[in-house]
Image 1 (cartoon, rainbow, N blue to C red):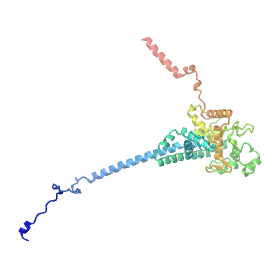
Image 2: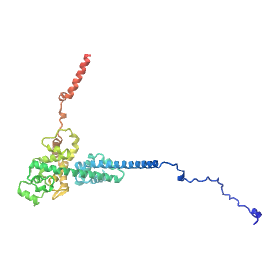
Image 3: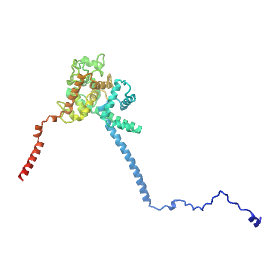
Length: 394
């Protein structure tokens, strides 16, 4: 084809829809080649600093969690001492939730066990005022479960510490009081219980005479008529370790060894050495009143019975003796008095314990004349008189 023919060929017309674009700028490839050179040491220092900041943040979070964990465990130590000795915290919460679900419009039918659980929940919130709000505000269920777990660990740990503490102390008290031969072993619990005459005397039901050889043999053999259960008050609960069968409430919960056990757990082991007379007069009665009302009727009696027994590890049943039922009988004695007369006797018994453990404060009995003659007030008057004399002389 000739050049003329080629030139005569029509050129392709641009499409009506085509749009002309300006020439594009050349693209730039970002590569390491344009990086500004820096020192290797400087880059490594910055990386290390960033990692250290992350580590500090993680460590701070871990420390906060550990702090809360330790707090819950320490707070939980009060539960077995002031609230409940056997029931689970979850059971208390579930019982309160059940009552909330029922509402106020429906008649509430409850068993005695449900009543005890609800009273335990109320006491729990009195002892740990923050608990209800914390349990309600915790958004993550896992955090709630972990909190209950730590509270339970603290509670069980305190119970273990208390039983371990009483193990050796009770042996010392019994040996000093009764001087058994051979003496009660400080470590070996197999030598305690009814096989030991001194411990057996304290564990013996008040309606039986431990001094009778037939009774001792019957109890040790668990013969008919000599089965020891929680339905009999042991003699260690009574003042002078003996009971009047016609007046069984007289002297109940006033034994010396019971006072010693209470003091060793709730004040100090050294304070348990002094049980004659009243307490040291420390002005802490009112501060301990709420705790006292929860304690005196409950925990110590159960722990002391365990310390006197031959059982080597904590359990709810010892042969024919049910510790859970024993605990509940004592709680009901204090909390479910049958009438006004019985309630007044309970209040007098609590007042006796207040004086015995915490002493009494006679500060309120001081007259104005007695206060004015005391040295602090006397010094204040003397200084005022000296100032007045100086003013008059000038």
